[in-house]
Length: 79
Image 1 (tube, helix red, strand yellow):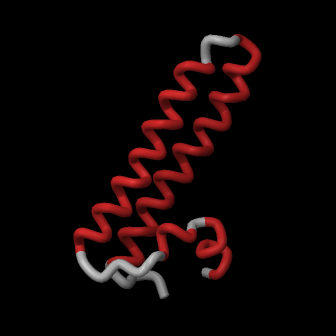
Image 2: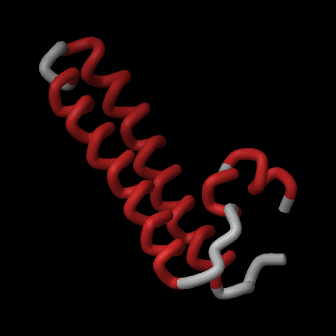
């Protein structure tokens, strides 16, 4: 669990109500949208586009896992 808290610190912030959870999820979604826009711009360059595409996939995975961990932490499934 300490490893998850190390790599996803924003997911384990104290969430006292549903509004804090929704704000947490919106922050993750905004990060995903911004990175997606940057990937779209940089994908035009042939060699850099492949590398950025791979990194973009990792960022999307990070965002998805962060949202799932936020919800699980809010529901007190994770200790």
